[in-house]
Image: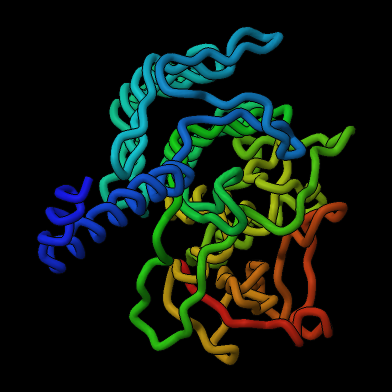
Length: 342
């Protein structure tokens, strides 16, 4: 025992320090693993109220419903800094992707390979909205707040399918690092959620006139966007809604209207705030996006300017798409600014 103590005393102090640091680093690495993994998710199915109905684990996965199966995954894995899923099928085969990769930090490196919707190969560019009919649609590589990854955890959803009954199918979830850079001098505004509030599907939605039967909008881009948005006056507010057969939230209405003109917008107000050039109040034109409710997480609400000091909006849960005035105290006192997204 005495010899062992003497040998220990003979170890140089620097070496003991290095060994101690190495041990601390090993503990720190082990502790950081779960934290990093918590930023990533494979797939979830949520109800109209946001409640988690099913969650995929690594390997294969099948979520079944009364109508068949909602989500099927051939294989899923979490690798360093990213989630990867292969052979992803949703809605009984209507939506299929060979591979979905979502990194832990933003869109760089995120991709959806070989996306097929209703038997047709489709674009997999970020924030692409593809209608599925009957109030259902799919959004590709959508930037949004990710449920289940902590309060305010914003990032990317590889594929999001909104089902007409209010369910949400989320495939490939990863928290992002920061909001996109902006060229103008503006305080940093973190990303926001899909919409404002937590509305549920109305029990008896109003009948919707399909876009195909409506008059084709004409005129400048902004005017055409207004014409489209105003066709949905009276449609109920629905959190996360971006389809007239389901309902709209504030950013979903903007996204849908401009998507009809081939202009993609993300589905949350925080990123729409960066989706074009800033517009001064005296230069507002129809179609400009107007933002309200400043706060530490950025503007909390968005509408579309229609002219004459008025804008069209999907206000909040329990309300419907309607036209309001910028002169109303609730909006005049919370006005943040405007953006022209084209």
